Every structure is written in C-alpha cells, then in structure tokens.
Length: 480
Image (cartoon, rainbow, N blue to C red; front, side):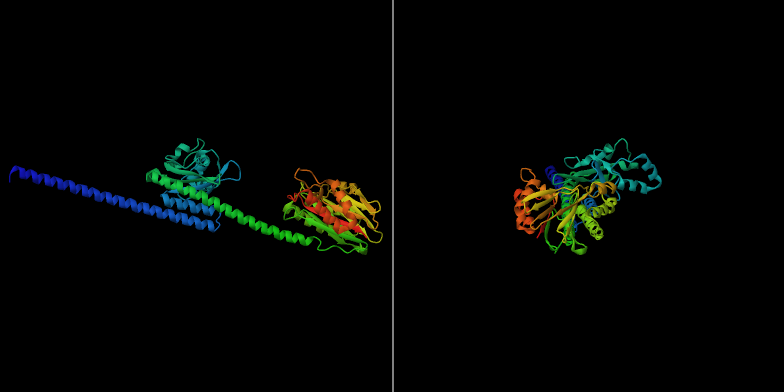
C-alpha cells in the first residue's frame, strides 16, 4: 500500500474514534438527562402529594400543631431537607412560639449556657428548651424571619446566632431555607428547613420549590384558621341562641291578672343575651310585685347576673317585706359574688289592690313616671336609692327609701331602663327623659298596652331604625 492509502486509513480510524467518543458522550448525557427527568418527575409527584395532603388536612379542621407537623414533614420530603420547624406569632406581642420542630432539626436559636450544660448529661433538656422557648421578634434568624420580605437561603446558620447564645456541638454547620408566613396581609409566623453542610447545600431549584411550598403553606394555615374561627363562631352563636331561649323563659309569658290594675311590659335585647329584665311576682292577699332591672354591661356576663338576681328577688320577696327591705336583702346576698366593675340598677314596686296604691323603691334606677288623669300631667318620682352590688349593705339600706303613691282610675305608671332614655339618633342626640315623658303623656289615656307600644315606636322613629345600642325594657301599670 502506498503512503496515501495509509493516511486515508488513519484518518478513517481517527474519525471513527471521534464519532465513538461523541456517541458515548451523547449516551452519557442522555442518561444524565433521563436521571434529571426522573428526579424532576419525582419532585413534582412529591409536590402534588404534599398539596393534596394539605387540602385534606384543611378539610379536617386540624389544630395548629397537627397542621404544622404535616407541613414541616411534607416540606422535608419535597426538598430533601434534614430538619425543619414552624414558629407562630404569639398572642403575647413581640414573640414567636414554636409550633412544631422535627426530630432531626438542629437548634435554630441561640442556647443559654445552662441549657448546654444540662444537655451534656440529659439530651431531653435541649429538646424541652427548644419546644418551649419563645423567640423575641428581631432576635436571631427566627426572630428576624417574620419581618423578611420573602424567603431567604442562609448558607451558614452561625451568622445569625445571637452573641448571647451558643450552638450545640457541630450542628452549627447548617444551611437554612427560611420564609415568613403571611395571610391576607397579616404575619402568621416563620417556616424553616435545614440541611447539614456535610449533606450538601440547597440548590437553586430546591430554593424555588421551598419558596412555592411556603406560599402554599401560608395560604393553607390562614384558610384553616379562618375556617376554624368561623365554625367556632357558629358554635358560640348557637350556644348564645340557646342561652337566649332559656333567658326568654325567665321573662313573663303573659300580662298578670291583678284586681284594679292592668299591667303590660316588653324587653328588647340589644344583643342575643339581655342584661335587662322585668318580672311580675304574685304575693299574698292578691298583691303583685313588679320589677324592672338593668345589669351594667351587656352580653353573657350581664345575662348570668340578671338570672341570679331574678332568682334572689323572687325568693326574698315572698317574705312580704317592704320593697326597700327586699332589695336590701338581695343586695347583701349578691354583693360578695358581683364583680367590682358591675352593678344592678332596679326599681321594685308592690301593687295593693285593696287601696289602689303602689309602694316602690328605686335602687339607682331611672325614675318612675306617673300620669295623672285628672290633671293630664306627668310626675317624676325619684325616691332615693343606691344601685345593688356597690355597697355591702350598711350604706345601701340607709340610703334606699320606699315611696307610696295613690293611683286613681285612669292614672298610669311607666317604668323603663336607660336604653329608652339614652337611645341615640344619627346626630348622637339622646332621646332623653323629656321625650319619654311627652310620649307617655300622649299615650297614657289609651291604656298600658298603648303606652308600651307608643314609647317603643317613638324610640325607633327617633333613632331612624338605627342599631340598638342598649337593651330596652318598658313596663306600664294602669289603674282601672
């Protein structure tokens, strides 16, 4: 063979070798791409599984602790982290509380010297401290985390450990991905996952996935809390409605029958539970006790105190003592059990069919209004008296007085709570005692039922059917 032939064979072999190496590289690259594809496919599957579990968890109304555990354990699988934790903003302003810390999560906060010393002989001391210790906002990585604008990748945890603390052993060689948790513009807490340096740093893809998972976790936590709060509110409203039904049972079901008088009353709560009440108590010799009362405050506490006061009054009034003596006894019983910021204003009267009189006492309550048919004038009756629950007994009994009024045919008495007089219109003006008296004067000649109806209508017209700010109770007593 000549020299040109040898050169041709050599070039052919060289080209074949190059092609062989290129093919080998292509196969190697194809294997890498295939591995990357499988890895991405697995990551995608883990993400979908995480989101699916997240949705199911919200539907089961989990506690914060259960949801936190599910989120942290799920994130660890998705991004391949070694440990993780969630801290939530505390009800104590200025702190974050740990909700869940995974088993292999290294300390993310500085540790006091005494904890490190105890941990050398008892590993549980470290675990107990981490699960109970709250973190001040702005202190260390976790304390700063809630104020971050977005997720961050911290390559060395030791940069964020405060000088006053230490890291346990070699666990400071840790990289962290950390994200604030926010929902509807409000801070919820901080999510963090960790990886030891010996296990490699988090990649850009890991960080992108973590950031997405943190956003979904914030949404899940916020939705779970909204859902839970709505259900709790619904349950409370149901309980309040049941309590309101019980309270309505305590109010008179019908007008009383008492010789020579016609009595009518109503109670309109401002909320579900009323702090006002009125009652009719049948006494000996055909007499009738009439009471209108107002417990300070509103809602459940006022309603409970109202029920207690009603029971005491009914029991004590059976002694047939004077109104002031009855209220004096009720005050002595109730004073030890009433909160310092609460009291009860009350007006209690006894109707005497035999002589057409009404004897009543006023314990810090609105005055009674008396319409005289003969003169067509309204009198304001203000016997002295102290509200129940303010004094243990001595001052109350010395100050509180009885007042007896003789009622002629056609005369009428109006008892009411401050929800009538203090009703506000759109200009923040009070309905006032003068308007109450004027309305009463116009309606009294039409009888007790008309008085209650017209006063209620006048208040509604004055407030333009606006929101009722206080309980309203009205009782009218007409002498036939």
